Amino acid sequence: MARAWADSLIKAFYIAKKDAKVYYFKAPNFTYGLLIPVSLYLAFSMAGEINSKLVVAGLTSLVMLFGTTSIEAVAVVLEKQTGTFERLLAAPISLFTIVLGKALAGFFFGLILAAVVLFPLAAVSGTVVMNPLLAVIAIAFASMAFSALGIIASAYAKWVPEAQMLSNFLRFPMVFLSGTFTALETLPSQLQVVARFLPLTYSVEALRSSIAQPAVTYTYILDIAALTLFTIVLLAISTKILEKRIA
Amino acid sequence: MGSAIEAINLTKYYDDLLAVDHVNFEVEQGEIFGFLGPNGAGKTTTIRMLTGQTRPTSGSLRVAGMDMVREPNRAKACMGVVPEVSNIYDEMNAWDNLIFAAQLYGVPKNERKKRAKELLELFGLHERLADRAGNFSKGMKRRLTIAAALIHKPSILFLDEPTSGLDVQSSRMIRNLTKDLNKNGATIFLTTHYIEEADQLCQRVAIINQGKIVAVDNPEKLKASVEKHQIIEVSFDQTQNLERMLASLEYSSKVVQVGDKFRLHVRNTSEAVPLLVDFARENGLKIISINTLNPSLEDAFVEMTGLSSEVMAAEKEQGKKAASLG
Image (cartoon, rainbow over all chains, first blue to last red; front, top):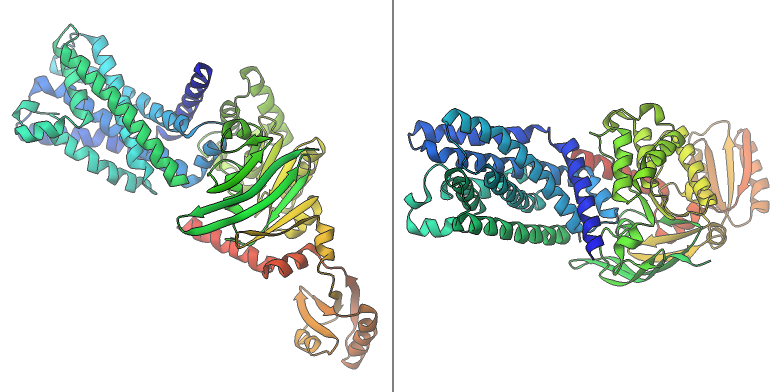
């Protein structure tokens, strides 16, 4: 059993490595992954609604969300479109291994984008990350949850723009409901409840906690647990959807 | 010898559509087995089930002695799959494509490079190993796809239209390779629209039509089953209006023009040949060649499916054009 899991994980890494070579440098990953979050940030800042202490965690989470869901839109849909998905299906691996491999590709892409944004942004804004290790852990868990979310949106799509559009239905409401550029507490109480069903909320909260607190807080632990739960549930749903789509 | 593939009452529904209807056949270890049928007959769905890409709705399927539903991954490890459309990664080079295939199939790390090198040499791609596959010609992509399917030395190889749209040289190379792999013990499951190719290569063929297997036998027996007609193939020094004139002859039940030749279906060739010579003399025609033909596998196919291979190939081309435009 343990050997089968290890084998599955190794093959998922091979798929992620292949996806990095094939899909990382496709244009939509940069337009959606960097340009849209930065544009949103600029829009908020021009409206004078940006709290500079909140922006580092918010923008980093947003870049990860848009980047990982964009790479999934490209990596899942193009694979289906070009017929290479059949190569994976014909190989002696489970569908879950394929989904895990896709999620890992998004996960690593999210890490790269977070590093590109977090460190320069922290330096420019003069923000000190109190516990960098906790920040890295929060980024890793958030990146994986967002990737799994991206696979769900892409599993239904036949074309990359269609997948991006479906992802937008999930991404844009999150931008406004997850306390990305403003504190969650400023939202009406009903919307605060809705925010608790969105993974971006936990990513922003965990990152803010690691920036502000040197020690692990109870909220931080709950945030990481919530992101883990999101990842497990979203990966299981993605596998089920793809299973149904290819049946 | 045991069975490499055993399908019993294999059935597949897509919602209410019955795509494969209680199909039964067995492929012996070490044989080249042809799987023929017109578009929409259930061929692709059957292959997808055989290769574990979709689950049967009902029925049992064993590949390499393993149950495809219960142990799909163990069965898939024994097979190589070459789909109809080459599905290598255009963005990666030939070498990386093969290494990735080796990784997926669990080829030990110390053997991957050696195996990839051997295959690139075998397929004449070793000088282009660092080139992006997207820059390859159609024939080269096909060769690389087959090489990737062979990286783990499978005992069963599924070849779906392996020579479709290829130049003569690449087609011949792939046919020879198919024979060589079979000589070395591999079982080959071949689908092709070129019925002549199936006749040349396959020890047995199955014909599927409207989701049902209509015949499974060796090509010679299938040909013998349609021997009620005899065929004379004749060519004259001109072809204009001849098809209509030949069709009006009493002793000919059917006339088909094939290039500059005419195939006449007759009841008795020994009676028809002198009459045909008289016809030529009376109409001032010179006979260039005249032969009696035995029924071909294509005749058997047409008889069993009601569809000629030309129509089948045309459908196929239309399908491909639609797919590339869509």
